[in-house]
Image 1 (cartoon, rainbow, N blue to C red):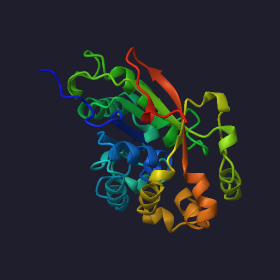
Image 2 (cartoon, rainbow, N blue to C red; image 1 turned 45 degrees about the vertical axis):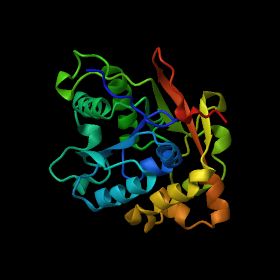
Image 3 (tube, rainbow, N blue to C red; image 1 turned 180 degrees about the vertical axis):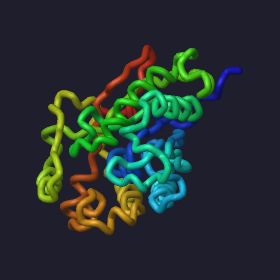
Image 4 (cartoon, helix red, strand yellow; image 1 turned 30 degrees about the horizontal axis):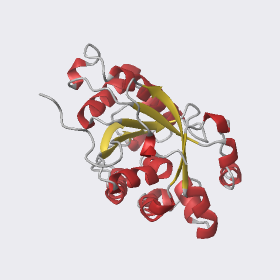
Length: 262
């Protein structure tokens, strides 16, 4: 039986694979909202935190705001918060093949044209969960289309392209000093590595509401949602209104993120 088209809208269907609840909103909230508004199927896989945790409830609210469906949580523990998933290993300690197999299952179920994840630095701060998610998603992207890999995860499906949310040297701007002030790394890539620079200002209201949905992080001063929430809108909006992506995996059929190369 021929599967239905993966996207009913004018933009490609999209699956985000991120480490923590809030990464999806911070890194790709604008693109997720943009694609959903155009009628494309969108979904998000989150690698850490238990499905019955308070952060899962916050994630559900954020995804509803972005039009990205229900949470798809792998349920591993956060590297720095072991009790985030009682009885489960930390993501960075789990066998990589196990993590890959779970992501393959979601790719084959969601059947996206585009997959988006973290960059090779683990975003600006180099969080170990971001790095592990980046590694596992690259492997899963290629494995998803091969019938003899992870056969228990469903029928093969090969997305068209894999993108990594990133920050170019020129795009760090005011965000770099804000992160450095709380003792976090600032890791950015050369500008020429950026394949898509997406202006998401038209979807900034939804993106910001999704970030605010992660209430427990907004209440703290050190996490990025909390940092952003304490800024005046005039300072915050230039930081959040543009999303940058590098292209990691290319299949014979082209897939362009949001069909935007602005």
